Image 1 (cartoon, rainbow, N blue to C red):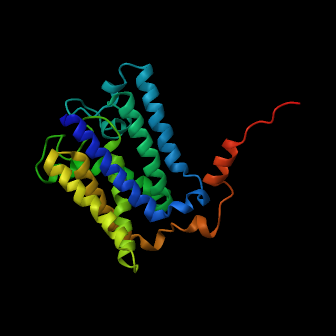
Image 2: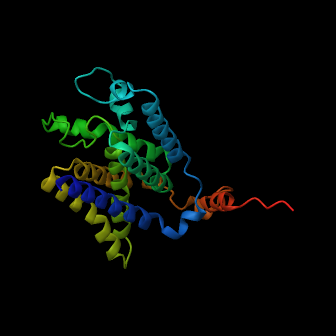
Image 3: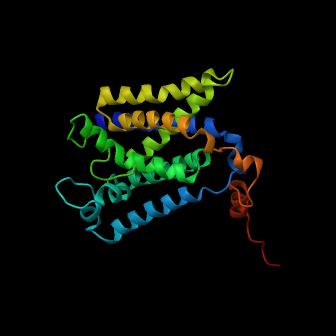
Length: 247
């Protein structure tokens, strides 16, 4: 029962951050936005890593982040290894793709990639700063899995939503939605020792800082002012076309 509650509350936090991300970019603008190639690239890597695991039984031992093993690359490669079974891997990859796409549309591909990398590297350094040596404290990956970096990245969108709502009139719902993310994250951490909540708080703080410092270079409306040739809507329409029947 405890595992079910843990999984449900963890998923609930992701749903909350997804709603914040959609509110940030505008759900009605998705079809007019360019294809998120950086997010697609992350998806390809994640799927390729899972295929590698299926084809090579030693993949996890070679690429996970077990602290008893050497290898500077493990902190990065472990993110693309999945250890939650079929449904866990499907959830991790699906949320990674969606969150990375939303982040790319708002932050731009370079900043999105940088924030995702921060979600990989920062938690363990923050742990070390506070003298926490256990992996289960701030890092929810348990040696492998993309959920920690994904939750970190998703929380940056909630921070950006809060700052945007703060300068707009009539946006109390957006402010409440954005503030609910760190509140829920801290609640999960204190109530369940759920590291997903804590990395979401880390991401929220960094997202707010980056939003303030990088404001001049963030152009989330660029696709709306100059529509790209290939958009999400055009690709969906192309995929939805059926070949004509002969005769």
